[in-house]
Amino acid sequence: MAGTPRAGIIPVTPFQQNCTLIWSDETKIGAVVDPGGDLDRIEAAIRDQGITIEKILLTHGHIDHAGGADELRERLGVPIEGPHEADRYLLDSLPETGANYGIDGARAVTPDRWLAEGDAVSVGELGFDIVHAPGHSPGSVVFVSRDARFALVGDVVFKGSVGRTDLPGGNHDQLIRAIKDKVLPLGDDIAFIPGHGPTSTLGEERMTNPFLQE
Image 1: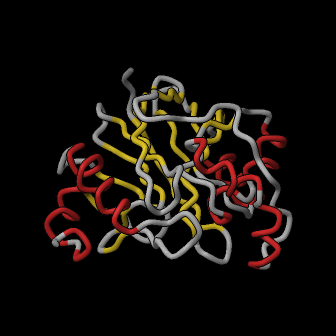
Image 2: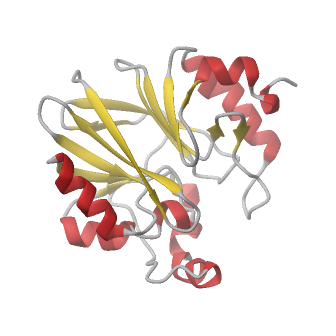
């Protein structure tokens, strides 16, 4: 699949999570990645860009990434794909987690499609391969467009940091292994949007990220 991808970041929730719109420049068909909340703001951005949303994609099951997914699915009438089924317990407990963090309206969510290593996801004519990268959460996945040299990594890796592993189901050694063995080999030229903070490239992180130097 080919197509020129475009992306726009909408910070949502008190955690300033990078909810991302991705779409094809040619067709304006797109997806919402990790709608953690602030759905009116997300829908305004969709209208501003003139995008037709085809699906919702989830990188993992934490509240700031998935808390608004079920309601947005209902509002837009589109399916949810991802994350890996290992995050089912996180998605099931979103209402309780939301209450603990003061995030109103979070709903439990069951995706229309769970994703696993080696799966492919289409957004219009854009194509993404799935890399299962556990450690931040057991079911974290990375969406990578090999054609466009672009990835959506959730909270697996950040500019200068990596995902926290002190939450239930987190495992630091597993996370570092997943990054080094499965994510970095995708290529130094891959630009990525993380779940929080600024964008980067895998090459920059391989060379300068202090968590990946050991």
